[in-house]
Structures are given as C-alpha cells and as structure tokens.
Length: 105
Image 1 (cartoon, one colour):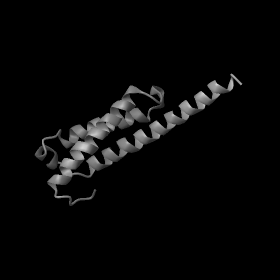
Image 2 (cartoon, one colour):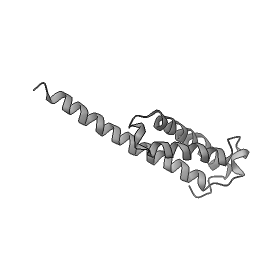
Image 3 (cartoon, helix red, strand yellow):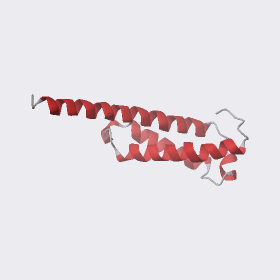
Image 4 (cartoon, one colour):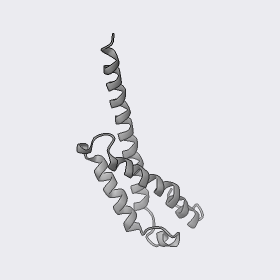
C-alpha cells in the first residue's frame, strides 16, 4: 500500500503538466494568430508596443514552449502564458475598442 502513493503522485503530476502544456500552447497560439490578423497602424494608436514587437514576443514564447527540452513547467512557458494574457486581456481589448467592436475577432 505505501508504494501506490508515489505512483499516483507521478501520474497526477504528469497529467497536470500535459494539461498546462496544451493550454499554454493554445493560449499563446491564439494570441499570436490574433496579432497576425490585426492592422499595423492600430497598435501605436492604443499606446502599445508595435505589431512587430508583439509578434516577436509571442512567436519566441511559442517557439520556446514547443521545445520539449525545457520541461513541462519551464520558465519560458510561464513567461509565454503571461505575455499571451497581457496581449489578450489588454491589447486585444484596446484594439477592439479602437475598431468599435467591428473586426474579425
């Protein structure tokens, strides 16, 4: 009986790690695709980084999150989640307000 606890722990840890990996890739990918579809002149209008800056940040984070050598709970994946959340919760909302809610997303 005492040996079943570490096995269960490893299964739960690997399951949570895979879930975090998949969710982070989806989140960063959605932010990257949304950034690709926006107009270039809209980013300075809302006082944000230029479109190229956001594409570089999100693209590098997506690339580093795809690499398996950094592990499931890598620092780069957590930074990518943070960058994607800032983009989606701040910049995307500003872009949507700028275009009066009309647009692809």
